Image (cartoon, rainbow, N blue to C red; front, top):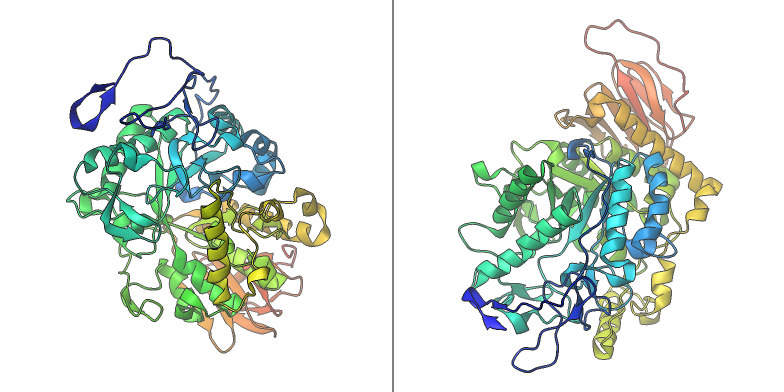
Length: 567
């Protein structure tokens, strides 16, 4: 190969074309896959393969809905269907349409070690996982989503590389030892030759959005992107994606996962922000989870009061410069001036379920009544709601942590580390599922047939009703209608959230309560048929929620509506 400027090497191979396999040898060493490989048909250690870019897209007239009106559905390709492939997922898209989903968010698909895994151990970032169906399978899935009116987001990991099959540092300084993250050395974003490393990730983002027609990307753990340069990597990325959207004539979205509670991530570049469109909001999840489960271990020690839940519903950040007991320091800063569509919220996601020893969902941890309250608060909140696969029918299956590392020593360390991690919380090692065993994967696959069982069907109907109510009620879907007025009673365990003329009244206790909602005009939805409206109050049975509409100012009093909207 011929040496080129800035560390590049180049060669032309006239006979190469779609289907040709190739590898690189450095200084006469063993063949290595291409760092920008478009396809790894034989896994992370095999040769790379040139692909045919001539795919028959049919989405030329597709126009995605804005993120501000989104209902996002997070899914994992390997457990979403029995087959666990891109193409098998297509058969379930109509169910998501019926539910009311507008966007699906696919957990990482870049080539990782083994046949199964969460995807966060990717090493060939340009290559869709061969076990899922490779590039063609992924394009078929995205195209099928667009044909049905579903937007598609992809989870990407730019903060670290997987440990198995990672040959990148043989090709250049992709990581540096001057910074460290929970996964080891940090990605080189501000050291020598960092320009080419930054381009490696930015070009990857462009590829997913341009060549695979994704509407946007979810950026994993951006707090682990350590960059002390004058132009932060996230700012450079958002600027390039905005330019790409103009080139393509499409609106493209970037969503960041961050635990910093730093509004600069989602503020515009013009005011010193990074220009990311939205971020996952952990504080609302933590506040809601602590209230309904009573858990106080780990980071939940910072949460548990209705006052904190009310604050999260008002502004997303509970910790906005206040002292965090878990961190033993002040954390965050106020999200002043940000609209509510800058935050994506959930009851649970892959992290919050899978990082529990047994992978329990919220429906495994709390009563049906509290699970319904949680769903109602998230789906009527001012923020962009996200549902994790199977949540909508209270799936019986857990979502466990699973891997299939091909390196035996690495596999052993992962299994032992998982057991050791949870033994500190009182779990017997033999009770912690082994991530490497296939049965751990199989236990996590959704059982779609159970949706027709009465207890699961009832929850599915509740989710459908909530999503349809959000879509049909302007005060619930507009990001400018904030939850600025929230009444609550810590001792009485009730909370009432106001959004325009809508009131969401919640009773977290095991006894009936009377919650204020002045000027009730009609009941929109209730989780129990024993809910009663009494003019200016809502009578709530234990562990129930009611959504009512109040009269506009100046309207004459009217009798409250019948309880036709109860579930």
